[in-house]
Length: 345
Image (cartoon, rainbow, N blue to C red):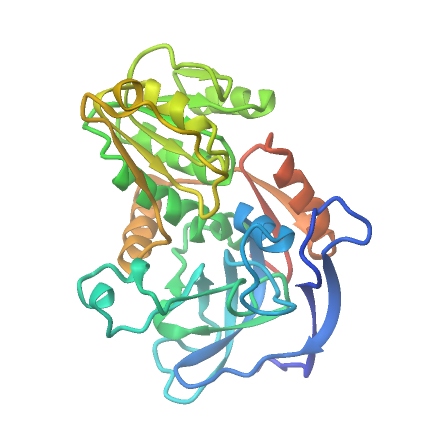
């Protein structure tokens, strides 16, 4: 039987600000191990992915929802305690704890299958302490079983980068055998590229990082150019993972008539004014992506298992969370960064 300590190590955001500053906005502290409430489980964390949203929370791009919050929402861990009325998982089960922590279940959006738009929704690592810690609680109804194919470090980025990338891919309306553009090529985009390539799509990557462009070509992209370049051919669909609104006019210009551009970021800087005739006419579509539903998560994890989607990861020690976030901010990363926190298979 696993012995649960009373205290744990965790990172928390003190005063949001640039991640490069000294002192940094994120500090490691010792705090009590949380206790699971009704319908919740306590999870001993094995690994936690480092998402660009964690950077937005730490730097203050997103408003503070929970003082001194512990970031992290790509969590893989072991169930070590069940709260009252929790019965979905057994002690020792390996589960994933994602960005979407809870929705109300009664609003019109929840009742119509659009729980990602629930106005009462709560998020791991923003509204509630997340995975840059040794333990976390999660609502059992919002956690996922991790396919046995994936080890814990590899599975972690699937829980946000993968799920959000999948929803963005669906929102982008990529036609069968179509041409897909990906703007930015970090954790989410490189997983989305694998989905598209495995399903016979032609992928074109547009991103600022030279290393990221080379990585895209290694994965099978047809072309890889600068973020503000036009693709070599008109695109049926495009997804922007870059938190940069200035890319939008260029991305729209790269679309064929009738094409769709999906913006996948939770935070994007202001979009410049658009000329209707040049940017939107010819029935081009511009849409955003807000979070995900549990159906998205379950569908994507089954697809990733079937297609053997494997994120490329750079492993960091738990104590090196700041270094990982600084690397993510550079925007020229190879795949995704993951913190090793507990013993991981």
